[in-house]
Length: 539
Figure 1: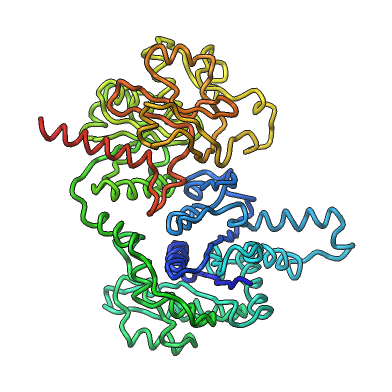
Figure 2: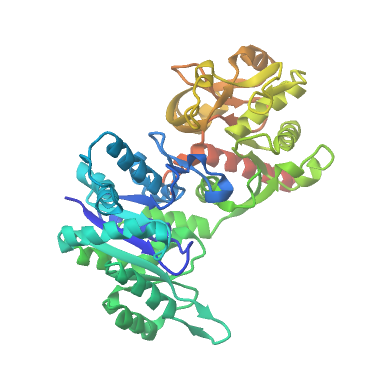
């Protein structure tokens, strides 16, 4: 039987429950335990797939094609373990399941209620992964903040599990805020006290309290929190602000969060943690030998979480190349033929980000043209690859009205199009290719040099594809399909061999990049940007 750890949050949102959960999981994994993390979100959407990035940040796609919360990206980046459909559950999915059962007559005419029917389904989902036998410890992050109306059924489910399962099999961790008031020059514990009080009123008793703080707590503050929140002094954990999220596991190691957790779970036999690779990564991250500047062209740049996996992939690839990657956000709506040189001046590389819809499209195409014509290293992801295809068709093949049917359904030259079988699907999201698909790479191509092999799998999230009717024209003019799906023949990678570094991919390589296994494409792109920067410096 697996053991279960529940992580709740209080006082305010965005305290970092996901990072604390991932850090603890990393420490437990480093001590030899099989660990996974799951996220329970209180919103009524069935999944984040239809949410605007401005609403909820990026949608993270798993190997099996589940559209999930961005925190699952943190889990994978920390643990290098794939998550799945089972790792993210929303209120919408819970209610959908219960209502479907009710319609099928599974409740034999009984009145369907939040307790026990909704909470029973939540508990079933909470224990689903643990019952596979694949994991020793399952961490569950509960979205939202204690006191939110929508979070109450999840908190009640945790209370019931604390009562139903053996005491040593369930652990509750509460993340809270200890603010520093500059005017009074004091740390204040009252918000934490009230948050814990509110949690205890629901019947859930936190075993460990993790305190987010900008200042060192000190023994006096820790003792006060322990006394008034009814936990042991050792169970009050200081979580200081860190320069990077990847420092947090080491901070938690210093606070002995993993040791206290294991003790409370009744586990006494475990080795010292092996964090050698993690520490090597941190050393390279903290002490780079060079610097590159990358332009990120997108249309959601006002919210950093919209491109979270891309930004983290730059960190992984930067450490691998021992360079600091400075990312400049450039809104594609504000790029035109007159100012493109000014907007992209000083860059060592250009990444055109994924997205949906027509807003900012022409700016992206102009930016791609600039990179192609000036020799600036270019990397296009999903929509970014499609923009590279449209730009090449218009300016090299001289097909002036070339476009994607996503933006112009009446274009006479749809170089990017939806497959016929997709057009018949009406449900939102059903038309997309989601999850991992195989890709066969041409030997002696840039893609082959980057990956070092001819067969890979990468994750997808898109509706529109390169139109193979135009492939011969493209390859004759110098843009080749260096990667294709072996089963369907769909183009996965386009590149220009005569360019120093020009590559676009239909998939999302950022979704598989982790601390210990950075995305080869990002590593190759940053290496090219480093070389470009060195070339500028030597002139």
